[in-house]
Image (cartoon, rainbow, N blue to C red; front, top):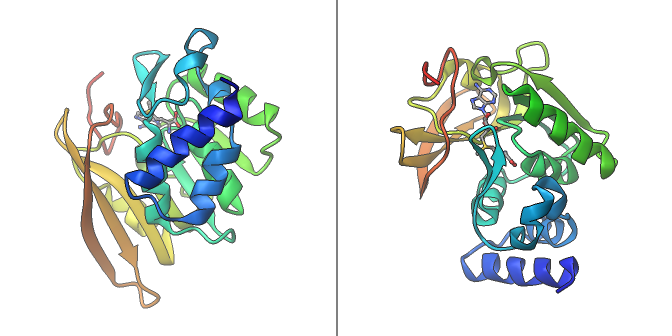
Length: 214
Ligand code: SAM
């Protein structure tokens, strides 16, 4: 099966599962996910599952990528922060749907591979940094949207501070195995609301304001 046909099937599954944001749907129809995984796994790139990317980390399941992106309600004008670059696929989705993306990965070899994949798609609006994302990226703040793609024990307050008025933050919060997506919204007057969305299961967010073990 060629990759365009495989993507069409994958996206049809996402729509069946409730994804409705047409911009997210169009982006995931277009973006090649297979270039973000090891060549040996390319055949599985369009199944709705997470896959290992080395360093005991994973590329997230397409459904959760679509769902988290949909929750950010991007219009194309936003500056977005992603914590946990991993393979770079989620950053590529965000870069296609927003104006600028800042993304942070703590594991250097993953960051290097992700940069290569993003460059191969000429996604030049992605600024990638190696470091501890649990502190956000204060020099680049404020952000219109923040997406955390690793599971945190609690919401790091510094991320709420780095959110612009009108901004949205989506983060999986829970224990080491199971989490719930938290959606934080900052109103124009600076007041903050929080809402719980889907159950999920992410690798751990490790760092100063995350889990403090390996
Ligand atoms: N968004 C990724 C993608 O599209 O492939 C998937 C992310 S993977 C589930 C989680 C990533 O978060 C891992 O690559 C891990 O190294 C990274 N990570 C964990 N703690 C981090 C931290 N404090 N700062 C930055 N990255 C972190």
